Amino acid sequence: MGFIKISLTISFAIVLLTVSGIFPVLYFTVRSILHHGWSGATIPPNSSNNGITTPISVNYHFTRKCNKVCGFCFHTEKTSHVASEEDMKRGLKLLKIAGMKKINFAGGEPFLYPKQLAMLCQYCKVDLKLDSVSIISNGSKLTKSWLENNGQYVDVLVVSCDSFDEATNIEIGRGDGNNVAQLFRIREWCREPGIKFKLNTVVCKFNWKEDMVGTVALLDPFRWKCFQVLEVQDENDASTTDTELDKRKCNAKRFVISDEEFEEFCKKHEQLSCLVPESNQLMASSYLILDEYLCFLDKGSGKEKQS
Image 1 (tube, rainbow, N blue to C red):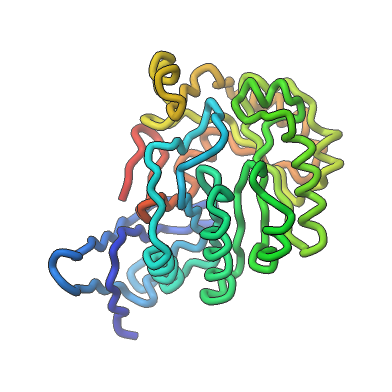
Image 2: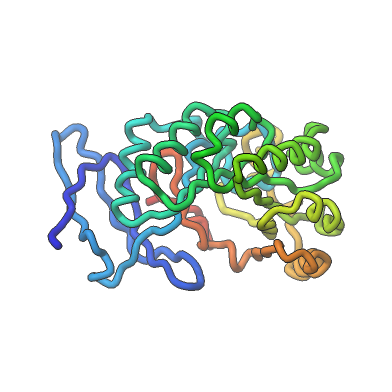
């Protein structure tokens, strides 16, 4: 089979995909040689020969910038960097070569960069021919016209909604008085182009007692993922003083709930077939995350690590 020669300006990880999820096994790093002329690296075209399988599904957080201030955010606005279109496409193509089949664009808030997001979705669907292209958004910047123009490149749209009570949303840092109405608009916008509609909810101290059964049933998502709020070292563990001085920093401690409280929330909503709970134990290290610098992040136990 030979080897595929690659010129690369990013670092990326080869991971082991098992039936229970994605777990980092081997970091294969290729460094930029911008100051040393062209160089390359070789990776096997069929890495399973070496006992390593491919990064099937990737979450690409191409921006950290966000228009909300959720107090528990685990991917905070530490930088304003957004890679160039050339670097984005180069990195995504290499991941496709390595075996990527699904891409999920996230942030930050990806719809703060609607042109770049449209370009990424079209490139992955048309040029790379990926099986699935999805977006995670808070929904506030999404417009009907964007979906009309670009919906053919999107398979799944995921909207984050932590409460159907606007007072709770405001307490969390996500509310503007229009969240719930916008959520129902987006649900309708997804129907005509046939985009799968999915909900994400972070279960925390301010919403774990809320009964969301009726409203979720009306929205009728094909999947409703409920995450137990997660503390990540150096991401959302800032002191109260630090968060007051810098609104980009988060302190998730006041949002944390016990495993028992999370289980109670899930039990209250178990009648909904779309419900997919993710406790801290399931969520930590279970996602392959590509950051704004096109490096992989490990947000498992302990301090966040970048490839």
